Image (cartoon, rainbow, N blue to C red):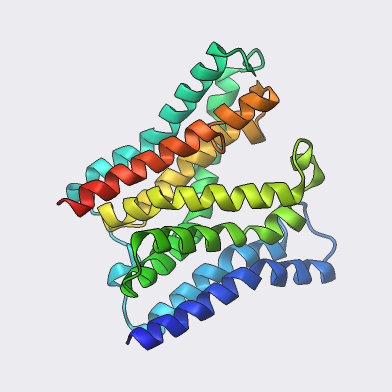
Length: 270
């Protein structure tokens, strides 16, 4: 059984890492497509989950796929998923204001709330594909191999990050790389996702559900991403962004890791 698990896991990782480049190849033949919404991007997004479903079907094992909400026993996990990113965003912006390294004069709260609500719906659908691949298949299969926690965090986070390679190097337009190169964005993204994976893995283990991770990921897309990246409602200085960006800043990443480690400690001592 473990031999089959290891084999399927290797296949899953390989297919995941080449899925974006399959999408890039498809887009080379279908040039007349809307930017940011091509068939190739759809293949990149859907292929890991499709593989997870195929492998689960062949293995005839769905218990650890995390389809149940488990709200009654795991409501605290959902509270974390809903409120963590808004709290991180508030804390980091207040710190940035205190150290005078952020400009919030462009914020229109009505426009931000409208954009965040719109993003939340779209992101939730998108993150079903992501999270049921990483937390619905990759994470539980790594746990079945009885790897130590740090290897589970590291492997799941690295695969998650490297899956974005084609996204950062090809799919995204040049306007997203005005302050950092594509390669720098990819490398920093992989490092950040490896740290994020501590919380995502522990949240999955706490709730025994992938939906909590879908919600956490969607709140990240809806609140700090809209505020800082896609909506450009605030602007940091260079060092302010390094320290206080609520997505990839040092403070926000440390908070994410800290919450994940607290959940790990609670799990170990239960």
